[in-house]
Length: 589
Picture 1: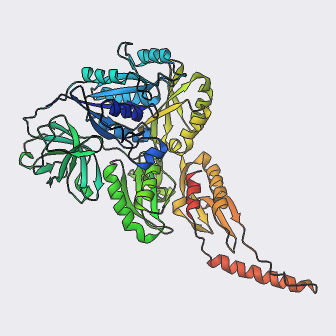
Picture 2: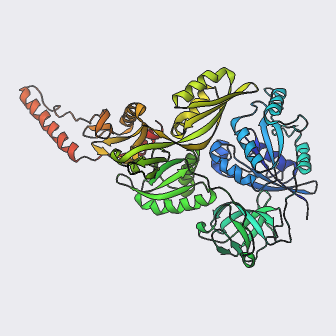
Picture 3: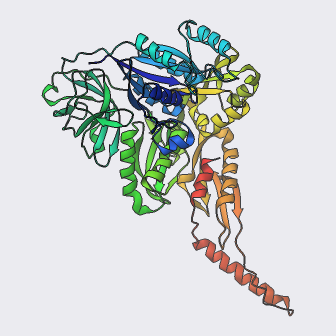
């Protein structure tokens, strides 16, 4: 059996993880010249379009007689749970730093994750060929902030391939071999999975002990027996093999048609050993941070939406969903995401891969409601907020946010954090930049905070956050009434001080997007019974006096009166159809 090295690449978004993976595949000959293309590992069309990695992707290469298993990871803060899952299947990690940007917020966060798991970390400086690269400054920053020595640092250019073979040599030399025993009973970790029409549920596995063959297998957490159809490796395309031995990474086509039988983090073993083995520790379940309700535009598509969501949830263990019903929109699903980008990607995939036309409500965060009786209720949608008379206290989720910003932009960033109810915890210099630790409510982060942070810092600031606890807040529910009818899907929970401003912005935006009818439509924002903002969509008006010429003005008045009477009657029975734009308008407030 050849020696094995399992490693992962971790970095801030856009520091060159996927490009470095492309160079590895070229140097090791894993991809032929004919199949060579940019971003080989980003298989999803959305990944290619946006130039970001969403899913972790494994690949097996051979270099100098050593088998290298690399797991390419995402860099965006919304997909941090993917990073922790891929690290759990490795013994080493390449910490990639952009020589033009230096250490960023997620560089620090991913470094801490790798340290907690006790991995061997190799610091790699990328993009050293660029004219803007500050190799000396960033080297110094790494030595001061993360305690590396200059000798440990490997300088490469993933674009040109400069020094990439030396990096592969360092991986073979420094990353330890997998610990495990081929003679022990089989234990295999499922680190991700997806659904295939022909193979059923396909699990990506890392063999910890023993040998994985097409025997009768058992999934410990769901107590399910499996007879695999196929076992294989990623080279980088899926390639069937007879067996996977200790330390190897590959896939297993289970043939299961029900996705609920397989959980990410589960332990796979032989049916004969199922009572003798100690299950692997698995993963901490990711907690959804942002909730949206998704409704099909055609009510008959609800079962298709459920089916699509089940298949996506298999590939994305951070998705949590349950059925909901709305008077205005019919049956739908309430879905929990890890952030707005995560929500956007999932909606895009539902539209493209499953051909579903959907309406999504405004994003909201989970709140804890303390009632007068002393009980605590968890709510994930403004529609579920109980009557204000029974509420003693509303608690909102807070985050510990780390912002790294150049000193020139410090004032603007601190003002922005203050405007979003942030409280400064600590401040320290990191090279030419400042690291700010803030406590910011999650509700403030999920709307437009990230975009505004990029604009006030000219794109130089970076943000990383994690949930801390719940704190009391003076919040109210802002209801939206269209033609005196309350639309629950448009209601939002807002801090009392800014509720009126949010109400005004909502009705103003809705006035622009709700189409005109033959009767006028009042749009109101209200807190309880008090209307705090109103706009009116004017009615279309036919010129009923056009056919008159000369004569007494009473004839003209009579026709106008008759028209007004008809409009009044129409208004009392008229229904307003809300289009997708109306809901998107609230999303973009």
